[in-house]
Length: 237
Image (cartoon, rainbow, N blue to C red; front, side, top):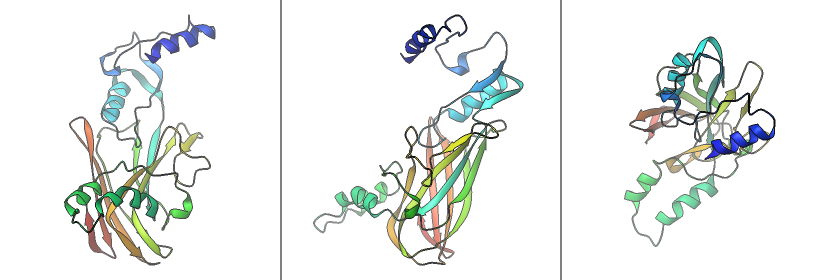
């Protein structure tokens, strides 16, 4: 287990007598006194990952002293309309073979996030990114997140779906982003692609409306993204 490596690393660097390691779930742990600082990282590709939020809420209330420091402080969720023909073709070519009707399968495939998408540069964005949610870990109570946003298309091309990422504020001055405009490709965190059911030809000035939700259902999240084009319903996924 990785905690064994942590113990050995602490000893190798002369800190064995200054660190106490506890292996287990934070929700089952009670410290001898409240902590001054709480550091957490329970995300997946996005901050929505199983019991992430409920564990943070529990730890904030039970394990952290009033006014204690939380790292990270908040995650800010962003979305952008992208043209991603290569990703679309890689995921959909299996359902476009020999003239057969695979619409039953393609409806499911295009309503499932988690498509493997290669590093995305800002040149693939078709509109200015829009913030759709903010998760303030000092205040958050509800694990569900939803938002309604609108994009104005800025360049001619074919849209294939919505790219979602997050920026993190570790404190007032320090943070990082795994967005497409970040200088370095994301390593630990990826970016999530919410595909559309079909590619859509878009023209500058077109307005894309997006209602996006992440709902904790049981032990995992279920996503919903409804798209409109110039106020007309386009896709419900």
